[in-house]
Length: 243
Image 1 (tube, rainbow, N blue to C red):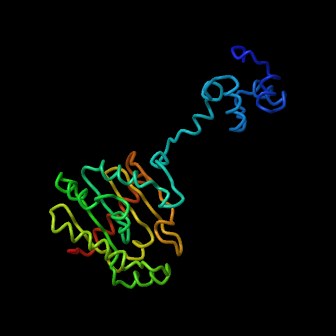
Image 2: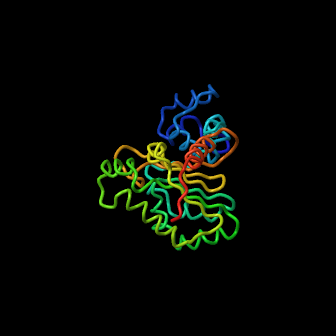
Image 3: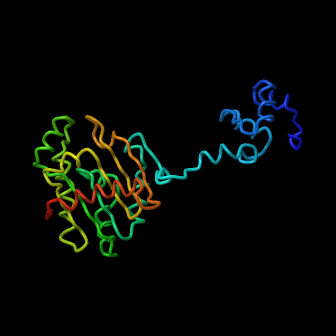
């Protein structure tokens, strides 16, 4: 405050609080003002928040498994297509699309088929786990969603694109087993090496209207591993397909 040539009363006036409020801040180092007041005070004093209230900064730093949450989106469609593109481009060992239809990727990623071809040629393992377009769970989900571009059609679009890739070593396609279809249709997991995009499907909403979590693996047993194990379990019991 001396450097800024401000008294407690002048600082209080500058940030719109009572002088006694500033006096309480000065008297109790453990007291944390509201975030808005902290921002205004730091701006008035021309200092960073960690110089005055380091505890507030420390509390914002993630220290547990929540460190793996890189970003959260209220809708899958709110996640920029560039994020998907960067994750696909950056993966070198494992690309795993375990959504129930996966068809939207071809719509949002330019020249996606050729991108996959290059990835496979470079030694990256590419997997697609799809729902059975003729399965009972697929028909049930179609009735729930009640949209023109139904679930079975979206799956067949993916199969058509995969068929254009031809039989390639490093490209694998499976349908989830009938026993696992309910678990598959309710949760989509898309994995790119140590990053994953996860969508829990809500009620009657289609995938792009459901939330999405971007996870980045930070260690054993975290959220990334939990979702990755779920997808791998469905894959292990899946039915191999030749698109």
